[in-house]
Image (cartoon, rainbow, N blue to C red; front, side, top):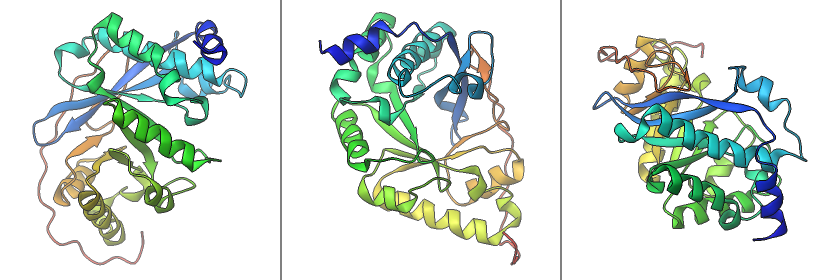
Length: 261
């Protein structure tokens, strides 16, 4: 084990955290495709409260502990009985070696009985990456190890399509600003429609994250978006897997032309 790994593991108890879980729903079945693990303090404080304590000196330890807490908490909450995958947010800048930094995750999965092929690792494009080549290496390495990767907040961050041109994750999570009120906005409908086609051609699974209304859900389903996440279908539940509410959706037909977004 390298000195870096020892340092990560030895500091892994430095954060007092727990996880909330939110479903990513397969609209064709009404079942959870995955649950995303969202960091909280052990007292249920928000992610912002926790992340405010993360800096360059402790982000390695934080990233390691989040992975452990996500798996252990999901198994304790009953994810093994659902068949759903587990999506874990990670900090690309905290991964100095994809193979070395995954060892504690693999050990935790083995001890809890969680199948590693059901793991998804999310990173966000809202974080400015100094080295996109490093991100590409992580994605490629995780794919070889049988994990899926997801690009979160697509369309809201620094890189956008430029990042996608350099490497392709297994999933893209569409930022909610691109489809907010899509049932009443032709520009948003056309933008999402183009992303749906692009993902289909690249073999990337598209997830719409942040769905809040039945109209948005209908608009997304109308365009062929199968996987959705948001308060409409199930809010995050602290240390638990929430029940899914699947509203009835109706085809919207042609939308009237609007000049506003």
